[in-house]
Image (tube, rainbow, N blue to C red):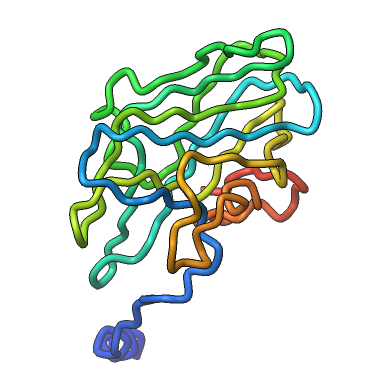
Length: 195
């Protein structure tokens, strides 16, 4: 009987989410060249010690059951600073873009603890999107950790591009709203990723 039920389930139509993504992060203006620069800066409400930045790709459904994670930067630097360090300190970069692309999982950038009031992601080489070949920066979330606490959540965000036209789902504030394309650990009040 179980074999019969399994066969029947395989014959049913397969459903695939095509729209209704909700708030899925921020998307820059599209460009004709990959070498255009874009940046995102998160300003913390107070000086805070941090030790990790997490870049979360924006994931969407592709054809059938595949997934796409477009707009993840090819070349970038993570710079942090504060009142005593206005130019900032580089705490991470994409040394080898092919090492972390293509990717669907968040990219964790760990570094020795440092006291900061702002975090900046500077992108010098963009990746292309599949449907028109235009180059852009697109992320679902940026998390900045002090131990297990995401200090970036609901903080002020500045971006290099104006708001992407025609999409209510791609606001700069969605980069720090706590919503990601992954399951969250509901047992904790923080943004622990449950894979």
